[in-house]
Length: 246
Image 1 (cartoon, helix red, strand yellow):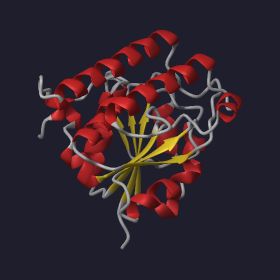
Image 2 (image 1 turned 180 degrees about the vertical axis):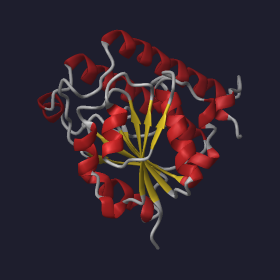
Image 3 (image 1 turned 45 degrees about the horizontal axis):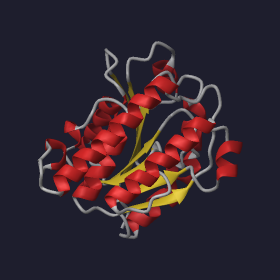
């Protein structure tokens, strides 16, 4: 049975990479592609319009997490059964979308991640800054130990979720910033959803979006704080709304 697959692209200043990302998406695998622009001050919206992509525009910059919330609300409103998030910065190989979606179609997982971390050599050859690589490895190891998972990367921007997952977890309560990505995966663990992954190539280059060192530090601290909340919730010492049913 064919499922309705909708691709969502949370965009911010992606004018130089949007078309390349869009062109790589296997159109025969998706029903719709939606772009949410977070008040970009470049030509992202114009490029999206030229490609015929349905667009939602935030009049004010709300943040990466808030962008995703709009993406998922709109996809569910349009009847998505599987939602694939792809960053429109061409950092991820959208041609691998079928490999990302197949395990969900087979009923093996409710969440699939495109992991950039296969070998250190490949990651660094792909241009990932050394400090980002080691920060990624450190946080991923800590997250695996605390949550009992065994993922090779928790920090990818290439993901697929089922409708049931997005309708179950209270993602609207999550951060409007970058730590949203970690909160929604930890929610998956709390609610007992299965997470799988496939390897994807690493592509870092000047036009690809990437948060700076200061924002990365804030993101890392936010991730650790979310893990502390997870532990307190699991131990029954304190309850947090992001881990409670809607």
